[in-house]
Length: 166
Image (cartoon, rainbow, N blue to C red; front, side, top):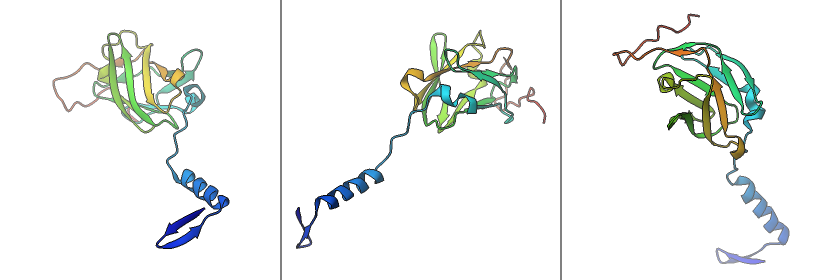
């Protein structure tokens, strides 16, 4: 193949073209591999506002489930769920009559405890992820049975009196 460049004729062989195409394809953006929540379940971490690990156990009988130690959360306390390999775009808490959007970036989902106050059954909180998660398995369950959330106070800069001391 002959190509004109700067007034000169350059000859390219078929192998030159193949090499150029391979290089262009390898330098292009790579799609993120979808993760399967059931496969990464054992490496998930869940932390309270103190940074303490509160994950009791995980299981995936039907829906992947994270079982949290019975805890008391402050109204404005964050519950931080880290899933290795996740590239989260959005996350939703499936509550009766609503789908509450949560904070989500990279491999971390942050839930404000106050958002869970309307949940009657703390053992069945569904979270749906939008991102590089298998489309047929983008939900997981958060089982917080035995946990409570401190009622809101009039102060907006609330201190969580229930936090565990180290």
